Image 1: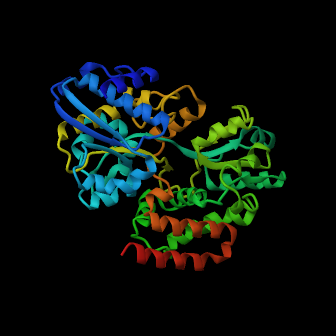
Image 2: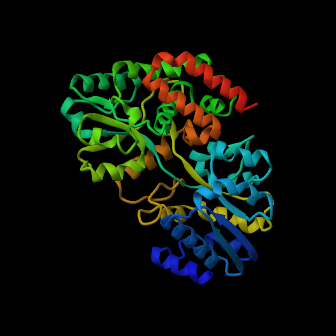
Image 3: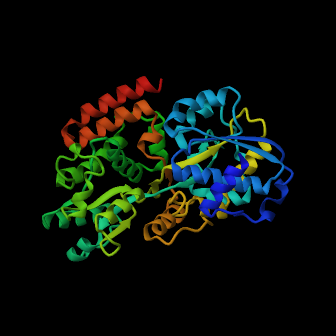
Length: 420
């Protein structure tokens, strides 16, 4: 098995990527280290196998057993895996997605790692890894969300990137006056509306309030939630969004921006490749951070974060913690997030990134200007059943904003049933 890992790492160009001295005190590690990963797609699988090979090179007396399971299957298998003969390290997700396993006592508290000076470089995601005042895992990759926009159209209309909600609305009015829509969006599969709610709610009420709502601690009929929808409705009433967006997937909504019928898209960085394929080079495409609505709250950003955790029943706790140190180190995060590997962003602020305009802007934003906290996106921060009901309500609001009172009443009924 070890030889397979070495071949994989050679293909990636991932050689011993961390100076031996950095992990010198871990050379005495021995025994078995069992890792279960859901990095099953080809590129992530190669990265995972490369990580194991490199860690094994640093710790030759450690026998590493890697099991890779299908990403979707892992979502139903993880609880059983953590309960019966658990491995020492597993993949999962941050924030509320880890809460069921924290509450069940199935994830180990790794707050001692976060107390080490090196972990200060991961501060942007500490809140997302924290429940009940303790940390329960470590991040290895994330990607930014934000407003991708037609730079050439902004220049044509004499517009600047907005920093405030008033500037956002003024820009939107100028765009509408030019005969275009402000934003494209496809809500056919619901989740894209969740991004708009995440940003408007966190910019209106702050990260802590947003997470309290996601945790079922706040009523959906709360005046602060109503203010979020009031802010959102300002754009809806202007006619800011493309028509009939409920009939389009997120990909089907791309041509509206590519063709210049709409000017911006609130979306994740994974959309950049599609924009470029549509002919929007860097002279036509740019990015800005979602603007301030309430100046009393700090920027919170959607940056879905993939993580490693140690099951509470791990048999080789020492080696598991050393592996978590390894995957969060700047050199390792630089390598695994490069364009020929995961092609995403390292969480460690001391890591480096590929020479890509949007990765650079996202890395700077998340590392230096997301002091409010890192959100995991609506369908990760909210429990699955609440997320499903919630996103149905968000889409309905965008199409029928006058239904808001009924929508909020339904969401509140669901909250009381789901979280009890």
